[in-house]
Image 1 (tube, rainbow, N blue to C red):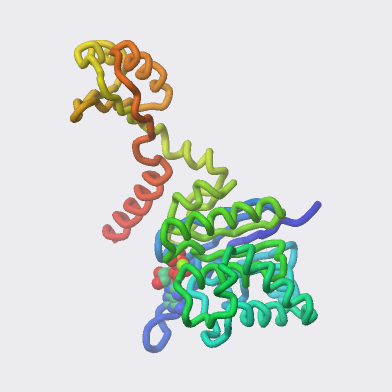
Image 2: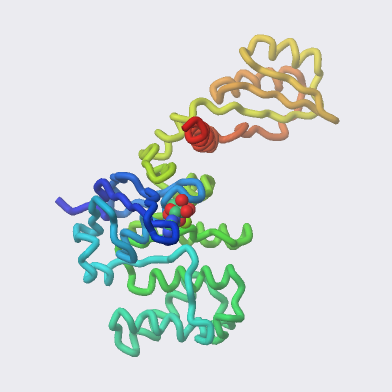
Length: 321
Ligand SMILES: Nc1ncnc2c1ncn2[C@@H]1O[C@H](COP(=O)(O)OP(=O)(O)O)[C@@H](O)[C@H]1O
Ligand SMILES: [Mg+2]
């Protein structure tokens, strides 16, 4: 059987803090999880949850206090496996005075590619991450955050990695930049690349990932398919906006739908139903009242609520100690 892309067993990390490094802070507490080949795996957690610590342990930038992990079936201590993986750090450091093209060629050189191959790969990657060609020969110190993030992604992909680790790849990007990075990550699915995607933003994980793990204060809170995680969050309500309704008629028709709420708004009305299943009945009522439909959308996000609720709960416990 082929090994998992990533397998983590009881991985634990204590940081030694304070002037004499006497006090220990547990940043990661017996984390176990598996990432399958070819999937886009979301690693979600609030700031300080331990995501970057996990990635740094996997990249062998630090040693674990306990536990073990494998990538592509190789122990993380086996550095030769690094030729088959890619990594975008949370705060990448670039050689400012190199141009984008020089930097990429330099990265390719570290993997031992020939001169010709280095040039080909640098150009390939820079177009793949949609960095405009006119910027390829500019020094990186002149780049915007969004452009640097693209260069970082190009760097992480330069060796056609089988698994790529991305630590908050969308951070600091404007909405267009976020969408482009998101599309790029989605395109990795077609090449069969496994993606380990860290983010504290649920929306990014939700649209991209097959499965996700939620980390809270160094501990695994949940792991599973996105639809399973959504169910943990329970039902989500729906909001329907209409115009031109005969209000008494609409009110009478909605009375039969349990938990529905009608609010008049300038020029129209807003209807809320507590579950998705009731949307059809509410739309029947809308039609019968002669109203025109403007929009239907979910109210809130159950996964977000679950996630936020959990964090608050843990904080509450902390205070009691
Ligand atoms: N070098 C370090 N020394 C001491 N504590 C650290 C260090 N790096 C991170 N931490 C602490 O470990 C916890 C997890 O941090 P981190 O892995 O960066 O979380 P995330 O990436 O999820 O935001 C935090 O409480 C953070 O303050
Ligand atoms: Mg982090």
